[in-house]
Image 1 (cartoon, rainbow, N blue to C red):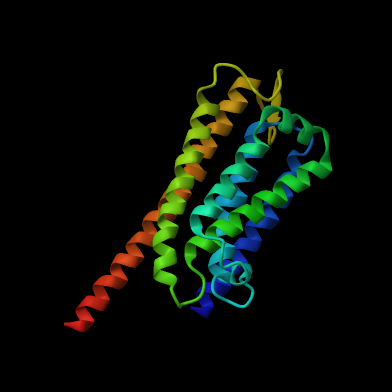
Image 2 (cartoon, helix red, strand yellow):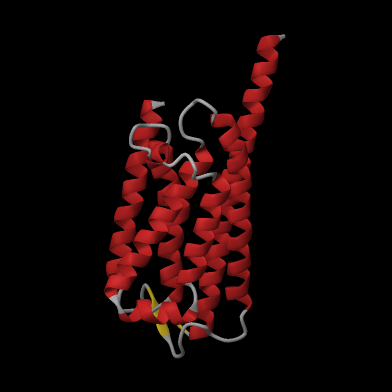
Length: 215
């Protein structure tokens, strides 16, 4: 378990380092698809790795926030994600490096809170919290899917006009936005769905083992 936590922690920091490099590389490109790649890397890859490493330890911030249930954390994540994808807000972010850093920080904080809440924390009562966590992750997968579909199927660009470059690849504004929506569907929605199913499978497996031990 200790080795698994160390691997998860190192993996999470490695992803964050890659994200930092990506932010620097794409800062002046104004590509929505590039933004979405970085966003999904934070909430759907780095956050779960870091949460696996921290869950239930003395560094787990949710030990001091027992009221933060998986459903509440999922709703918080929904508000954060949808707020920062309002077109007017995105325009402000594109014009302000400080707002861009705040946005990424809130994505990371929201992702950590959600995954930590769903993983269940300390051993006492963990199974009940994880059961609620499956619902929290599945709900998050649903609202990520909805936003991804809206972005991918929108007939017009919502985040500016003209051509952009996504990590050196030239894209039209509509294609850029649609690519961002597909990234949200392919990475974000799938990651939360897999997380929810994995939590449920773990609960059912432990319940089966407990039943066999009693027999």
